[in-house]
Length: 406
Image (cartoon, rainbow, N blue to C red; front, side, top):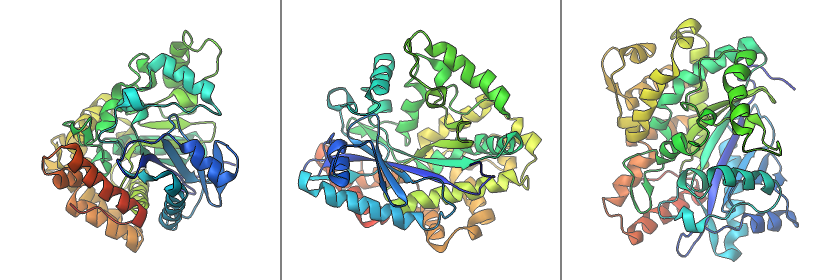
């Protein structure tokens, strides 16, 4: 069934499994799914939420079971599923850990690929890209899926999404620490994401998708070069171009949706859903052309948007934006930080969010991204003991569905 713009949504959240006692990643998603289902399967339907495996055995995904038009109740639904998973994991001395990257995991020694259904696809990915690295086996994100009905709707949505992508990490960054130290990036997940498929650069491109605004051009500009580039590696022809496309927003013409992938997972589902709702309302505003015409939105080259994005993954909400043309989209005249852009968007669309979502976005605007708060809590002490202490508190925030305060 094809839906129109903003008629329904699909949200996916990823979490890692860690041992409670020492926070080491624990690759037992198969045990979790078996315990829930009675036998091993890669997908378990749990009412309105579905659980499934990922590329690596220590990451589990929960997602809306099909498209939903009710975003306001998703926070509570996901929170219930988090608690149920944690309850099932208790006997294995394991719990879910939020944030987009494990701060002390060694991906080269601790990565175990999923060995069950679809393992052939994962094994091929591993052969091509060597998935034992931070950008592959140490990443957790939220994906937002937004529908479009036809080329005309795709054009509007794709133009708006491209324009918003560069500043999203200013709201959602949650991966400042890898290998037990500050990486220099508040969104280290996206820093690795940029280059983790360097063997076949066509797959990620510039993270910001190219200026393509209909299906035919998308195939010609994005899918066909990917298909050509992968041929020498995929001799059995088992990889699908929809999955190989790794831009920060990918167009799924198999289900007429654009999937946004630059959003780090937060400390609890309420924060994730608040960010999702805020992004959706901001996109509606852009699509309405109240701020800037569709033609102006389409005129942005991915290189110029990538320049902004590349700065934002370093400093998140504190990134100074000096591109006058970009600031003008939001009626901002002077150089300002990304926080000020989100504040401006919140003034324009905040009233459309639920009270709970408003509280969460106001908290983020006031207190900064989760990365900023994690760094504050660590107080420049990157000893493993201190990191474990702070991240154990994050695991509690996830279980109790509350915000992390340094």
